[in-house]
Amino acid sequence: MEQPKIERLLRLIQLLIGNRRNTNELAQILGCAQRTVQRDIETLGNVGFVVEHRSRSIPFLTPQQGSLKEISDLIHFSKEEAYILHRAIDSIDDGTAMKQNLKGKLYNLYNYPWLADVVVNPELSNVVHNLMEAIDEEMSVVLKSYRSANSNVVSNRQVEPFQFTTNFEQVWCYCPTADQCKLFKTARIGSVEVLHQPWQHKAKHIDAQIDVFRISGQEYIGKAKLELNVRAYSLLIEEYPLAEQFVTPIGENSYLFEAPVCSYEGVCRFVLGLFPDIHILGDQGLKTCITEKIDKIKM
Image 1 (cartoon, rainbow, N blue to C red):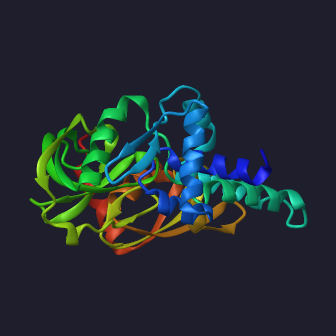
Image 2: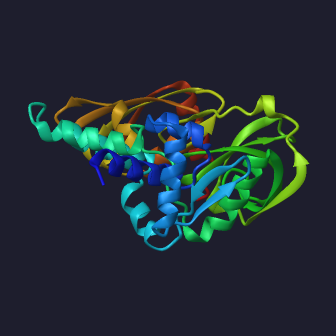
Image 3: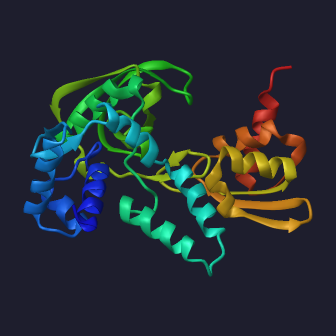
């Protein structure tokens, strides 16, 4: 088999894992004819891959089938893992051919720098499967026994799911009761009941911002500005790898972190855990949030 076809088949396998595109869209991504994609899918079936189909004739591979799970464990990355990998490649001397070869191979394989569409944990497969079905069919669902970290309550939520984030870790849903879109963590969902009730608010389905502390919102509400010592800096980029983009060295053992936030909750939790190692420079909203939380601490 010639190399271009091998590369195309490998890319097709990756694209088919949890796929939600039709064969024409896959052909556009792969730069070939739709009939070529259809033949390649037949080839995969002939060598043992079980290619299933969703509504509207969308082919997909389940990551839980045999050796495919082992392959997907190797080739899939979260956005944060992809960022770390990207930085590692960039650290290679610009004059070396290895750097460009690595970038070329990774980008050709994934077709997108952040390497999205990753694998679902087995224990969440039913939750994600039902959510994907609801999204495909444009149906409402009930998120049963959802454990909310914000309200500290376990409850059922009737919502309209419309988009997953990287790694299926969270799902964007429109909440009719709140009249807004919210992000729900799939790991906190007990189960999903798909209702025979079509979406009623499709025009309001808008995925919002997600800050480096993994907090979502319709827009950024402010900017966290912190001076960090070595310990705080190290723990920040270890726990929140994307935060490194917003850090600047300002001294031998001092760093400035300045980034927009969707809520002060995420950055407040980080600051309170390392209070002696951080100097809060701004903004005023963050200072107020920190002060209020300190006042509420039970002694």
